[in-house]
Image 1 (tube, rainbow, N blue to C red):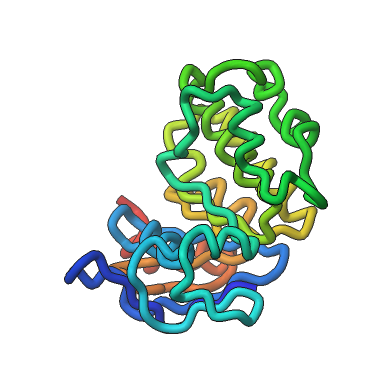
Image 2: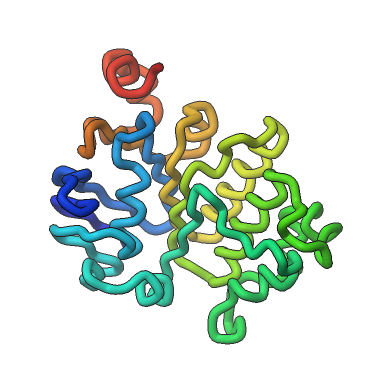
Length: 231
């Protein structure tokens, strides 16, 4: 579905991505791992048209490299940024409503689905999003993106700063997406969740992919883990 080939990305004159190539198939969870500064978030932004990039970038066979972010989103790619970007003065329900495209017609997901997945959001339905806890805001951001009915979701550090119980909920959420045929590109530092739920693992270092394989093969590759992942 999603195919990157020799992607280079830049912030001004700073060359951040150096020939990144990988694919994400239908209903596949792919973990993009690496230390801070390795280029993971820039990869997500390059896919979504948020940074200047060069190379080949295809979504369902269509070239999307120079499309604007809203155009990419309307083609069926969802993006959950690391900073969450909720609307603090709007309620939980209003935030979810803003995630819908085309008035929600034909969407695979409903408010009921969101509240069943995260019952806490139902309890806070009429609460301003700005007063939610970090975990609740993360749930809301994930669900708001899903209300747009994407075929692939890029999620940047969804478990950052969350309690273990909420991390477990996020893992269940991602597996629910996979069960419904939605692809996931998961940007994570926590190897535990990434290795548990992913079909494939990619490791980035200095703006390039330095490993592409199964979670089991990464577990067996002590050299790669030590050089590119362990602190």
